[in-house]
Amino acid sequence: MPKGRPVKTGSLAPRTEEAAVDMLSCKPHNLTHAASEHWDRIVPLIAAQCGLKELDADALAQYCEAFAMRGKALKEMEGHTLVVETTNGSLQRNPLLAIVAQQDALILKLSERFGLDPASRKRLEIASSRAGKSAFTEFLNKKN
Picture (cartoon, rainbow, N blue to C red):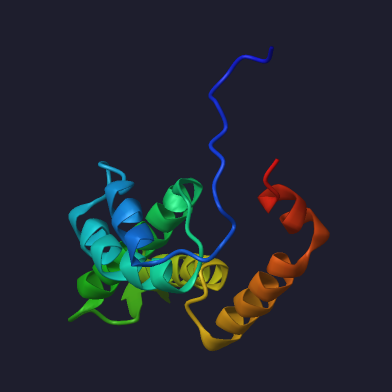
C-alpha cells in the first residue's frame, strides 16, 4: 500500500456559499496584513462563482500577496518621480515600477485562473458545463 497523505475526494459540482466559509478557514497564517484583508474580501466572491478546493489556497495566497505587494509599491511611489537619479548622476526608471509590473503580471495570470475577468469567467463556465457532461465525470460521480 502506498504511503503518504490520504487523498481527499469531493464533488466536482460548483461550490456554494458554504464553500466560501471552508476557504476562509484555509487562509494561510503567514499572509501579510494587507494580503489577509484582501483574502477575506475576494475569496468569498471567487468561491461563489467557481469550485474552489483546499488545493487552491496556495495560488489564492500568491494572488493576495501580489495584490498587497503592488499596493505597497504604489504607496511608496507617491510623491516620487517615475525617473530617479542614481549615485553616479545618470537617470533610470524608478525601481518600484518594476515591482508594480511584476505584480501586475502575476495578478493577471492568477486572476485568469479564478475567473476574475469576464473572458475567464466565460471559459470557466464552458469548462464547467463540459465537465458535468463528460463520461469521466459521470464515472467519478457514479455510486456503486
